[in-house]
Amino acid sequence: MNALTASAAIATGRVRLANVRQQSLVEAKIRVLLVAALFLLAGIAAFVRIFQLGLSGNAPERRSLSEALLPPRGEITDRNGVPLARAFPAYALWFNPRALGQNGSPLVKTPEEVAAALMQIFPDADYNDLLRRLKSDKPGYLRQRVMPEEANRVFALGEPALEFPRENQRYYPQGSLGAHVLGYVDSEGKGHVGMEQVLEKQLLDPVQRARPVALSIDMRVQGALEDELGRGMLETDAKGAAGVILDVDTGEVVALASLPSFNPNRSDRALNELVFNKVTNQVYELGSTFKPLSVAAAIDAGVITDLAARYPADRPLEIGGFRIRDSHYLGASLNVPEALIHSSNIVTAQVADKLGGVALKRTMAALGMNERPFIELPARGFPLWPKGEWPRITTMTVSYGHGIAVTPLHLAAAYAAMVNGGVWRPATLFKVDPAKAPEGRRVFKASTSARMRQLLRMIVVDGTGKSANAPGFRVGGKTGSAEKPGGRGGYNRTSLVATFAAAFPMDKPRYVVIAMLDEPKGTAATSYQRTAAWNAAPIVGRVVPRIGPLLGVVPDDTRDIDISDLSPLVGKGEKP
Image 1 (cartoon, helix red, strand yellow):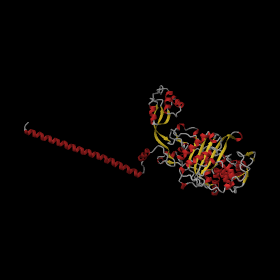
Image 2 (image 1 turned 30 degrees about the horizontal axis):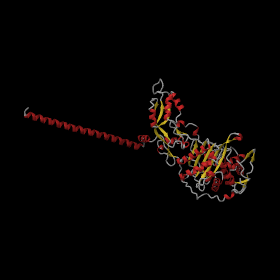
Image 3 (image 1 turned 90 degrees about the horizontal axis):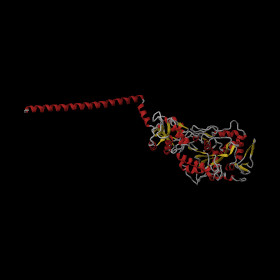
Image 4 (image 1 turned 45 degrees about the horizontal axis):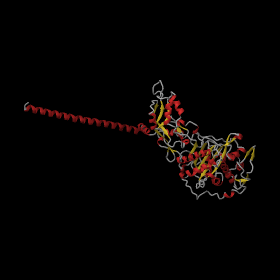
């Protein structure tokens, strides 16, 4: 090849290379323009959509996103924000009998071996129930809440029929604490019994469930109440216990306990007798705790004007073939303070007789004793209320808590009215702003309430309530020991309901405390006595020092309600 040919070839190659470079640059520019155009179109489309949503006011995509971020069921907290019920994703243990096909056993090992292995993982399970389910050909839950480490252990058993669906579960961080207030949620996601049932719509509403619902309950106080009631049950071998702590000015229920309790985390086991709420749903004859209410009604009506006036007490009252007697001889005569201190049926009945059935019935009705208790819970017992015009014997027996049966919550609300200045308010499980407390209705004069605070304090200082006297907390209250209906004469003398109804501090009452034991027995812990002075009153005496500081009531031994004008009245006559 000569020099001319070589030069021509080189020139031709340079031209081709230049053309390739130019073509590549053009293609790159086109690609950049295409990408930019796509981004521009996407931006225009998004802008148009946002503009449309702004004009229409509808934002379904935004709502669906917010709903996706919210829990499937709203949270419930106590008054201080402590979580009581919340939703969280969890594993369940499901039995699938078709996991290995239609024919043959669904299990690799025998049902007995699998049930025994599951008992090693879940010691609180029921072996017979597991065995029954594993032998059945029906699919279903073996357990509704399984921790990851438990799921790993079940998986290691190598049984394909044991599956682990991931579901949203309702979880109660405090376990059985406050179970009768909260209730539970079943496997279908439906609330039952307590506030889970009451708040069902609110907890599921896409807008409202974003904010936790604050109850009036204080879980610290709830824990103390349940602990002391449980101790009282063990010490007396009682079949059950109930208690409530109520704010006397707002009606807020700070604690509510019914024992034995149940575990709402095991909703598969919640459908039993333990879900029955003794505080709001069971009615009892609460005995001598009614005596201060009857005395308050008599003072308010002007029937009692002189607390020094004495009433005969040395023999039972014979009324229409009935005999009203005291538990033991208390003296030839007693005045009203002495009658309350020593809990005399005879004197209280005479006071009620002077007051009359119309006035006593009107007062008890004003205290809500003739209707279901006022509370948000769905289970509310109807009182056994004497119908029609109250005859003389009914008036007398009702005055000391017989012939009328109410719930412990009825009693708590009545005592709150008796000590707070005379105003009855409905109880509530919702947190209340003190400035927005319900007005309520006046039942007693303020002067009557002031006198009753003195008398209740005297009962604890000098009477049957001494074991409730927590130093520095100025407790006042009244014992009540009532035989349960049944047996000869309409009552079972071997079965008692022991109650102590109290308030503190009596110089300026803040809270009512009710403690009740169902069929306590005389044990060494109670000096073999069954009455409330020996079992229910000590519960209050232990609860108050535990909850007082939590509720802002600091013990102060330098303060007390002035009872100096009443003290000289006690013991003037024949002493018991």
